[in-house]
Image (cartoon, rainbow, N blue to C red; front, side):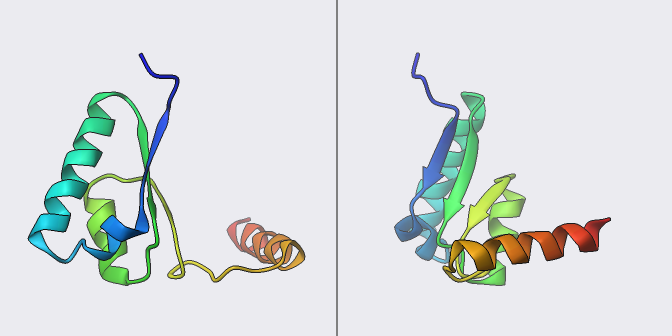
Length: 88
C-alpha cells in the first residue's frame, strides 16, 4: 500500500491527449487512480478542448496556462481575493 492520495499527469501526456496513443495512456492512468481511490491532477492544460476532455474523465484538478500564467505571490493573492468576492 502506497502512502499516496493523488496522481499527477505530466504535461507531456496532456499535450498528446489529441492522439490515440496519448489518450490510451491518460485513460489508463486515470482509471487506475480512480480504482485505487486516488484523485488525479492534470498538468499543462492549455486548451479548452483539454479542459473538456479531462472533465469527461472525471479529473477534478488541473493546472496550466489555460487557467493562469505564472505570477508573483501578491498578484495571486489579489486574483484569489477577486474570485472569492465574485462567488459571494
